[in-house]
Image (cartoon, rainbow, N blue to C red; front, side, top):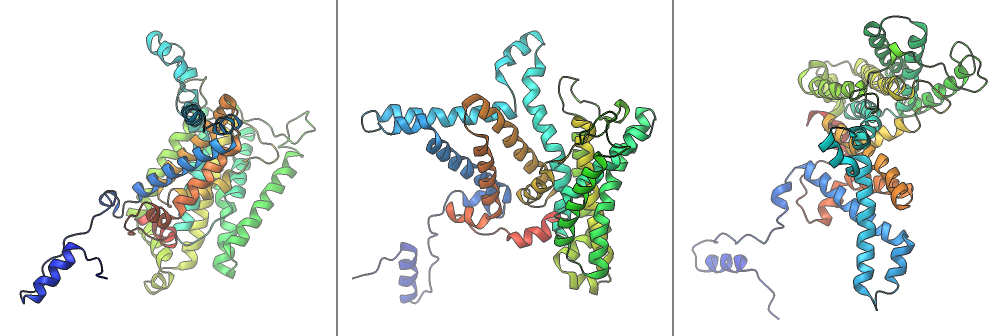
Length: 430
């Protein structure tokens, strides 16, 4: 049986037989998406998100009793069954979008009358509020990952920054123009101190930063619980573990009026994204960080003090996480309670990986993560679909983004991107 031969290969073989040398082969048919991708991680990330939403749609169909009942009669009413499935998925994602970006119900009234903008813009405001600490803590975690230092202690550093900010908030009495900057600085210093301890231990004793930063999470969580039950942190007249409130002069001002919670903390986060990108790409210290992250031996040969770099990285990483604690305290919560910060410090690890450890990527990853969280709550309220499904979609997105080779294989794209290990060490310099 004669094997199949492509025209280009056959022509080349004929030319070689005739003695004129092989003719150029006709290029094989290519996937049209390949020209867009090449080494473009943005396109791969977008495909990962689209794939996750498609899988999420399948999960919504599989967990909706109404859809399952309609699909049970697909033989007799296929159009209705498919229509119910499509409308259920569409309503769920529409509710997620309107809950995270903008509420269209009062948009026309707000445009024509100029009133009612608060209700229209509340979703995007809440997304910005949720994204602010994720951006700050995510930058800190990404900085460590890019330098080869795995900071898993952002949660404890966040608490340390919040405690320092709170103390300066209620103990210092100054005008807002002086008091608020001191509160911001205290948050950074508190987180930096929390990062200095594991940094010093790694630099001087070789203690692994993963272990020490994890243990520091428990140290600061227990310290928070202890301080909330004692003076001067405990709210006077309270027996519960609730702190004193931040005074008005220590609170971050709102960006769009008192009715919307978006505040100056988001602007601070944006400024730090720009500063972080400049630092890692343009400064001498940032270059040293990148060299150590890529090849510590080469850094030592070049005269870079690896111990100082390691300590500095964890100090800076802790300072950014501490600012995340300050932003939430001074921006929206105004007091501390047991378990403060939730899982922000651990979600920051996800955001850093989602953003491939690039400052702009961290910003976009935090906004996406926050939008899914805030929009998922609206989806649950509007459609009855459990909020847990939004968390599942988050996890699927992270899974696909963390495995770009899988996305390229699914869409048959050229494999030109860096591996996850390379991304961890080179993300800030790319």
